[in-house]
Structure formats: C-alpha cells, structure tokens
Length: 599
Image 1 (tube, rainbow, N blue to C red):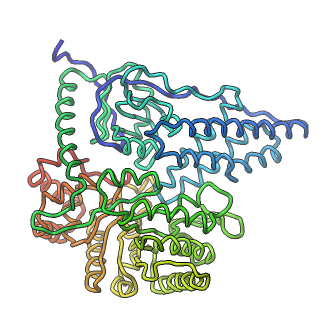
Image 2: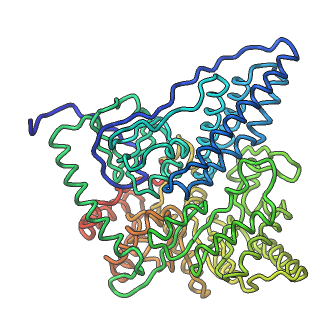
Image 3: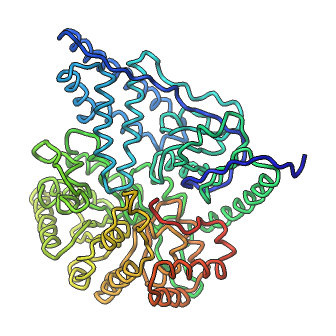
C-alpha cells in the first residue's frame, strides 16, 4: 500500500563510488574456515606439514592463474591486482615465515600461516600511506584461499546471482568480483574497506555505486532484502518504506542527469567564469587506472606513486623492470605529462640492502621517503636511472622528490640525480636532459624555507595529507586523535598560502596533489590561493571541473581572504557551509557533505 511505513535500518559507511542504487541484497560471503592448532611430535610430521603447505600454495596459485586467464573484458585493466596476489603467495613475510614457524614451533600449517598473516598485518597497519596500509586485505584474502585448500574446502563459488542485485559482502576481492556477472550488479556494500581498497577502485572504474566500511551490514541485511545504496553520502538503508523509496528514486534521477551533464564536459578545460584556466590532473598508483584517467577528463598525471613495485617481494625491482613500467606509463599518457614521485616508503616496510627490515619506534618521523633514499643511495640511483631512461621517448616525465625538509637533503638528492644523468651519458643512453624537477611540500620545515627551495626546482606540489599531519602533530591513523586532523585549520591554510606565494614569487608553478584537491567543499578556498593545478583521484575530476566552471576566480580570492581572517577551523567550516548553501546549492546536493578526509 502506498505510504505504508516499515522500520528502516540506516547504516553509515564510506561512500567510495557515487550513485544511487535500489534493489535486492545478495550475499557473496565465503563460509568461515575453522582454524585449529596442534603440535607435530615427529620430524617426519614437520616435513609433511611443510609439503602440505607448499601444496596448498601451489593450488591457490593455480586458482588465481585460472581466474586471471578467464577475466571478463571489464576486468582486464585490473589484471595486475591478480599479479599482486600471485606475488603475495611467495612473499618472504608469508611463505618463508610460515615454513620457519612450522619448523621452529612444530605446529600445523594453518596455525603457522595465521601467525605470519597477523605479524604482517601489524606491520602494514602501521604504514602511514593509506593506500599501502589498506593492502593488508590482499594478504588476508590470499591467506584465506590457502586456508581453504589446507582444509580441503576448495575454492569459493561466487557467481550465482540470477537477477540484478546489490552485492553484500564482508570484503570483496578483485578475484571474487571478477567471477560475478557485472551486468547484474547494481551496487557493492561491504563491512570492511576504505577509499583505496580494491572494491573502491573497481567500483569507481566500473561506475558502480559502492559504500564500504559499514562494519556489520552482512549481519543486518539478509538475501532478498530491499536496500537503498547511497554512494554519494555513504549511506545504506535496509527495508525502506515506500516514501523513502520514492524519495531516493527522485534523487537517483536527479543525480543521473547531473552526471550526464558533467561527464559531457569532463574533457573540456577547467575555466572559471572570468576566464582563469586551471589544470586538473589525476593521482594514480597502478597502470590499470589509466582508463579512468582518460574517461574522467584528466589533463595529465599530477602524481604517480611508485611504491607498489617495491611491495610484497623479497627483492628490489631491477632498473629494467622499473624502466619498462615508467616507459609504458609515459607512452599511455603522452602527450600529456606525468609526475613520477620517487620512492616514499619507510625502512620499517622495506627490505634494506642488508636484507632486513629496520625497526622503527615512530615510522612517520623515522627513516622514510627521501631520507631512506639518501641512505640507500644505490636504490635511489637505480630508480632515477630508470625514470631518466623512460623520459627519452616522449619528454613528458617530471620528477618529484618527496618529504624534503631542508636544503641539504635537496642538494644531496640533486647530486645523485646528476650522477645518474652522467652515468647514462657514459653508457650512450638517451634521456631528457631538461627533465623538470619538483618537490613535494609536506613538511613544516620546508614551508618555512619555501622561498629558498623554490630557487632550486622547477615546480612545487603540495602534499596536503602529510602537511596537515605534521603541521598539527596528528597521527591521522590513530583512533584517539584522528578527529583533530582538520584540513581547514588556519595553520594549514596559511602554510598553503606561504608555499603558493613563495613559488609564484620565484616564477614556478604550484599544485596540490593531496586529498584536499578532490574534495569540492574545499575548492572555493583552494582556487582562491591561485594554484596552477589540482591533482586528485580520477573519479573526482568531473565534479571539480564542473564546480570550477561555476565560480569566478575573483570571488574565490574573496572567499579565501575571508577564510584566512577567521581564527578557528569551526568558523571556517561554518563559513564554507553557508557559502555552499547559498552560492552552489544547484550542485552541492550531489557532493559529499563536509567531513574529515580520514575517518
């Protein structure tokens, strides 16, 4: 009966792929695998247990190879994720550690593997980079597949939905998603996950609404339940009443019309109403994201993170391996430019030349990023040679040094870059002799001497994620203080202004490539700083471009000046909220409401 009231259950998570879906829930969770422990009494049992583990790993490898071979065309751009799973199978922290634990503790393979996964999980969860930290889900997924073979349960069957449904899962791996008939998927919702999880990346690339991090949606939604998934606000409604359904159908229609409008103009330049053009680029981690870069109208790659090739392996990538990846990237994006950030990992997550991980009591302030590269000079030298070699074909590569805190570090890094250039000249290998060099401005010490640093480089790129963390002395992954992580803190805004002003006084362009750049709520203030470019996740680009086209640079400068005069983040947020409601009410309804970037 129209208007019938039922008891709705509303759960809030993280909206990682925008859109509205209304349909029936369909669970794809795997059966829980019981893990027991028992002692091995004889040496022969130890050998047998190691062989049993190796056999399970080999069977898992066969499963993943089969999935990779039969990937549907929609997933071929994500094949490298399956390669990551295959690398994890032989990762020293999983494979070798499990075997050593079986030998030393004389326990069964299941329990030894569980210990190895827990130890690796603790390491990954302490990583400061949100994307790399979230990769622990990959390790758990691969471990789950090995557990299934150890238990004789075989591989999970996922593809059994016969109608269009909303996929409900505790977590969803690319291997699971690849076995689902995507034409029958309306949305993804999961208990776990964050904005950089594979579920999120896949959902965004396929334009399927998704809400993750819902904690217990699998317990609250049963197969066949009617659900509303709001990927815009990060909300899931279970068993909605008729009025709620009608309201969301209307919102869905409005949103789809809005998306059609902004997608049509996504490939046009971002130009304000008074004629100011600003470059809008993409941040990526992997080559398969290039499709999303082009689809969403990016004008280049503002940040390519290079850490992925160094993770989940017991050796370091060779110069040729790095060169091949960087060359392919340059070719795919040409004639647009790509900014390649040099290695930004900590020594606590990376095998040093000694072959060991370095213990770090405070990794965020320890041997990481450019500090690690200057200590492990040959590692840095190899990466720089690979980047320089890749620059030869299209002359569209630019280099960014991360986490520079002083002139000494910059001059040391430039000296190694110079040595890499000279070595290529001696070898007769071509490269871009005038390759532009930039700095990630993310340390308060660098902000204080921005005018000095600007005279030594060709451009600045502001990494707001770390800049906010270090400026406010906030560990953004700590549940106790994460609520204090505030992008609109007056100190943060003044730091951004100082960097932009120093760069422009010295004739170099300045961009922002942190998460702030892709959040429309912050755009009026960021635009008013006079930035030359913004770089963000590909999916955020059409909205940002659309909003730029609906504002004048002159009024953005007024907004920014007003914000800089306010004394608290609360006042600035209130000011911006009022501005959005009055000035951008026609489009703000389809943008995520203001919230901390890191929850």
